[in-house]
Structure formats: structure tokens, C-alpha cells
Length: 83
View 1: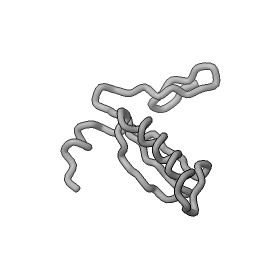
View 2: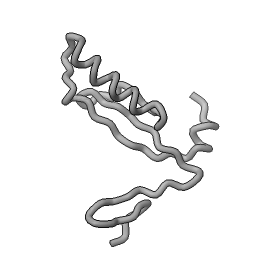
View 3: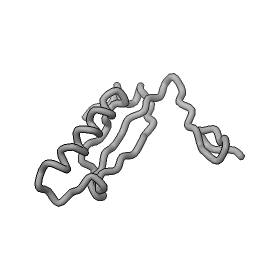
View 4: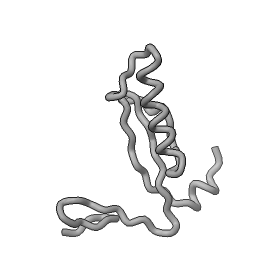
């Protein structure tokens, strides 16, 4: 099976990153993006902290409302873009 940008093995799709790409994360509460472009080295701590905060604070959100999306971006575009 051919998979665009990845390898298919044993029913799973494995994404192959090139040296010019990096993985970032967008984090959502219900369908609203609450954090975008979280670097891979910061994601684990950020994700754990958000899950704890949602449980402690009185908000309209619960831990089950939190989701994330992995995004592969070109490093050159991210580093040279203006905001």
C-alpha cells in the first residue's frame, strides 16, 4: 500500500520526517485551538499540565475535551516566516 508521506506497516501508517521538517502540535479544547505550534520537546510537559489544570479549575472543559494534532512543517518556512 502506498501512503503519501509515510510508510504503511501492519495496519499502521508511520510518518517519515525529512531533515528539513519538524513536528509541532496544536492543542484543542472542544474544537477551539488553545495552543498552536507547540514544539515537540515542549509538548509532553504542556499536555500533562493542561490535563491537570482542566481537572483543577472550574471551567466548561474536562480532560476528555482536550485533543491535539501533530503537524509536520518545513523548518525553513517556520524560521523565516514573519508574524
